[in-house]
Image (tube, rainbow, N blue to C red; front, side, top):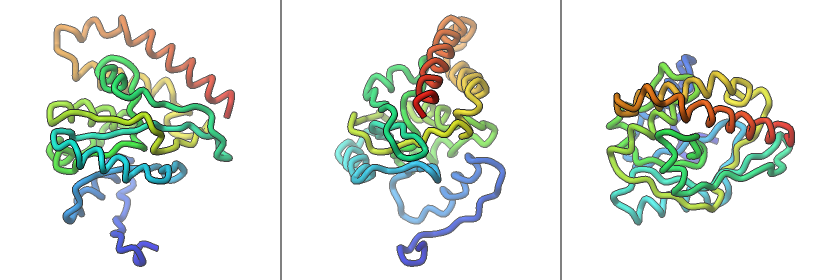
Amino acid sequence: MAATFGAVIVDDPKTGISAAINCGLTVRDGERYYAWIGDDDLFRPGGLLRLQRLLDQNASAVLAFGGCEYIDPTGKKLATSNAGALATFLLAWGPDLIPHPGTMIRLDALEAIGGFDVTLKYAMDLDAFLKLRSHGKFISTRVPVSAFRWHPDSLTVANRLNSSLESEAVKRRHLPARLRPLSPLWNYPIRWASAFAARRVSAQA
């Protein structure tokens, strides 16, 4: 299939998702945009084209994202995340509502920040999003462009607490120094709310 469509296959170094994605970035050959999808997740028909057009029409934007549907192992829709511009506003201190599957980034900007941090296991996309803010604006559509398959044993779902703790650490290091000691004031409520929402979706799945 790769040969038929002219795709390039890059060997996985097997040292984590970030390292695998970064290896893919090193073989860039004229491509302008980056998008990622998990092996069990989906792009909705026309989703990538919709995101590409958003970036094509907004030269100052470095990242475009759309709605993301949560589906169970059979493909049944459980919920939809489509916070739109609110997700960008909440990014630095609230829950990360920008779905990595369903995001398109200008490759020049992604290379400028050094790709994804290989020391992170869960929040490498959040860290990259926070770094990208200084390179341009984020634009969005509420239309679902992707679907995340909610498995109880998926990396993020099964390790909710560790994922939350790593996300909090990432957000704290991107805050102004004077605000870092205050971050527990909003981190604990957000952690509780995220865990509550995850339990509701898991119960449906």
